[in-house]
Image 1 (spheres, helix red, strand yellow):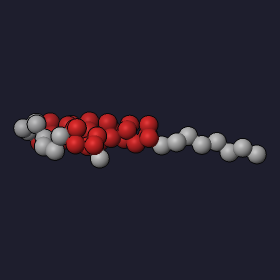
Image 2 (cartoon, rainbow, N blue to C red):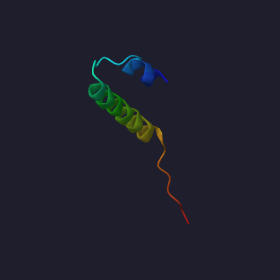
Image 3 (tube, rainbow, N blue to C red):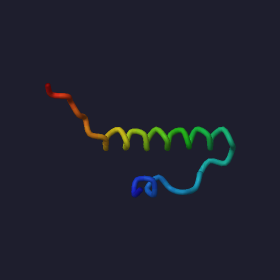
Image 4 (cartoon, helix red, strand yellow):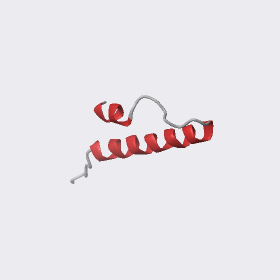
Length: 45
């Protein structure tokens, strides 16, 4: 949750299309954080 707070809670862009782009960028950053936090497991037989 700390990473979400670092991204800010308000949109800084004024027009709608810029706000959409800003949200897409934030979601991409959060997805990367989630990917880095997941363990990589391998099946050993």
